[in-house]
Image 1 (cartoon, rainbow, N blue to C red):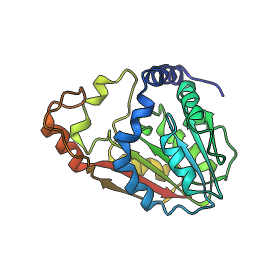
Image 2: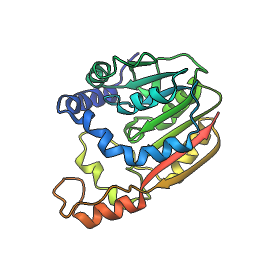
Image 3: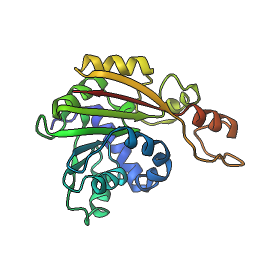
Image 4: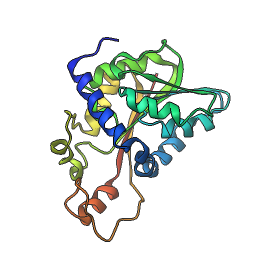
Length: 229
């Protein structure tokens, strides 16, 4: 795999996140919106699933339990995230992790039944190229599912771009759908998934101005875009 300067910047940033333990906190942050998405994916026990941008592997491990006769591949551009994921996943025999970027997925064509990406796709340097690669590795009849909190239709997340150390793509639901179609997907659609997490009495983090903005952000929810091959 030939790494672009953008890929290297992403790897370095997410390696820093891995060292800071952020990979292990993502399940708590993202499971409330990911659980409904999994319910829509109609996962069967023999499915092969790619978790693109898997971080420390929290979702990959959940998926591996749901496909006991299938296989899960967790992929992340950060070798440190993959190291953490492998250490935490040794008991899952149907789960492997690979270092890779979505614009050059290190896997054979027509293999996966499902591909999911949670809170990763707005970092992709070339979203269309990434979606074309996902389309390549999907088997006929398979489907791709992208779940993101940072998108144009939820204005309460727009400020994240200024706070992140790497470039991001702030696209609308319609723009993501158009990219799916340009990549060859059919039956493309989207829906919003509100976050049911209870809001704190006070907000002291860096991503929102106050509790109201956090609550408004969660009420609109995450964007789920999906399509079939």
